[in-house]
Length: 260
Image (cartoon, rainbow, N blue to C red):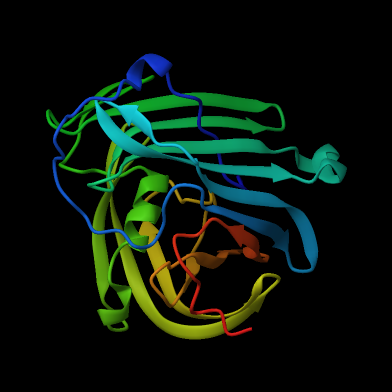
């Protein structure tokens, strides 16, 4: 069972040629921007097992003539625990700045003796995904596992009531899956980075969790305009694996949900 996330490769520089290609849609975004970096401690019960980092590059990239956020999610086990289960995984998405949908997704998995490299390029006009494993039809503005996470952060979650859901479609391993994100309510929680008022959500997806876990996934997002993930918890048969915010920098604005 994979207990910590997976990796994304660097994109070809030939793709990143700035042009004036018009946007396909516009999605307002006050949640994040270039230079945001969120660092987490990943652990089981009282054992710190590794680290995870969400990083939005300080400079924009260009894919298919469109300006994109280059967003990378990396997870690594602590070196002292590598003899038990070594993990060096990365996901990366190139997210359209105006539309908040992906043009390219890359993954590198390095776990123990297993490795996998995977790339998907999304033609959002012809609705095709070209991957290292073949070509597939995709719906308009389909998401990968990382882009879906950032898209949800841009939405007006405050206006949603408990039990309501956000309906998305997720492209994982050559197939499209429904992804529903349910609003569970609000809660104040404490992590290493402080005490936060949070909106609690639960993504339910067939496969391709943003944290690579199998099991029920719960996220605590700061109850403000940034909606940074303060905590991620996955239930497993013997307990839960938690990723808790350790520090943050480069946020688009203040984290007003932080109370201490």
